[in-house]
Amino acid sequence: MIEKTIANLEKHNFLVHRVATAAEAKDKVLELIPPGVTVGFGGSTTVAQAGIHDALRAGDYNLFDPYVSGIDPEENVRCRKGGMQAEFYVTGVNAVSEEGELFYLDGIGNRVGAVSCGPGAVIVVTSTKKIVPDEAAAWKRIKEQAAPPNAKRFGAKVPCVETGECSDCESPNRICNLYLRIHRVWDKNRFHIIFVDEDLGF
Ligand code: SF4
Image 1: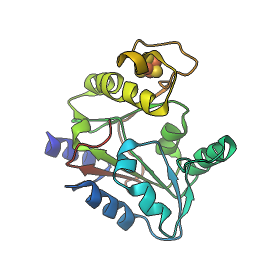
Image 2: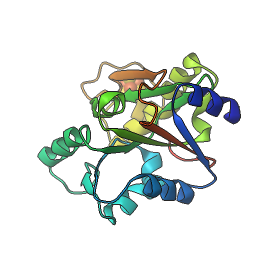
Image 3: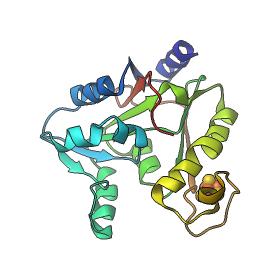
Image 4: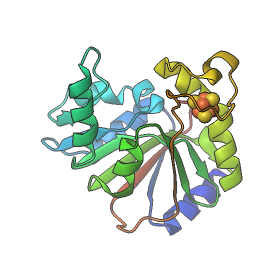
């Protein structure tokens, strides 16, 4: 399943790397991003768990980092918007299909905007556990396994935080607002996917 997924992603112009551990994924990210460039982040538990935020914070980079604790709302917005124009963008993904497509669910839109047509290079770090057979399975995975725990992580006041299940709520705090399916990459050198053979993220 993993080999077939990688072959189909490569057919769609994604550049795919496969590593065994989160530590190797972090090293790969640092290898791909040269010093001195601007870097933006899209929300990703996988990236955080792999220690990639911290590694980039310790390096010689100009970061648009909305995930630094204690920043005020204006700075958070500046980082989200600035990240969409950075030279590099580091994030995760909610599901990858065996057919070679990526699937995203976003709350505000900075992440789907950035990966669609923002920074010149996008680096996605994801566990191989997020591979599913097809598009239907991808949206099912996102609704059942990704969105409720993410809502809980954000501390959102939405029903799934209490029940653990999506009720397709109409809450003003709903985190499920923008859906993106990436079938193919226009610029062959733009989009890296680092698959990690570990259980990371949601
Ligand atoms: S639509 Fe509402 S209930 Fe469903 S996962 Fe999103 S925030 Fe939770």
